[in-house]
Length: 173
Image 1: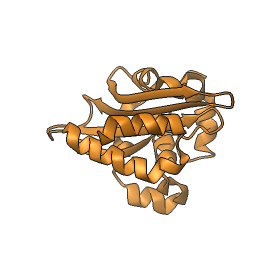
Image 2: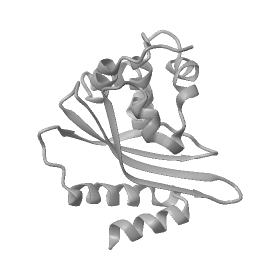
Image 3: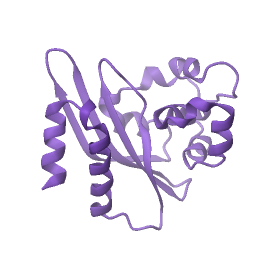
């Protein structure tokens, strides 16, 4: 199934327009990765009937490769621009691990989204927006570093130890 992706709807949802009402109607959207998945599904044409995960399995799942988040997001629509800040991949005998942090923007919105994605071959949540900036706002590396460190503290116990070491080396020093 190859549906045309509606970047306007996707970006509108990510911009958190009517987020409180959406969560009131669908409490699972309180989770940031579920909210991102819902925004994707709406972009693919989800109309609040049935499971949006079913729609994503028919559409986005075929194009989704969390190991290459940049390619996946940039291929949604030519107006979407995803620029990675940090891409760390690691594999051991049990699993593959992928951490991706980057900025998602578009000429169709005045927002820039700081995206966080941690994927393993045993657990594959969707990316999530961890901070939204206005396009005219100066985004400083120091601010992003602070946000990533805060996230690292929150996620630390779940991150693969090799990925954690690389992040600490990059962001603590």
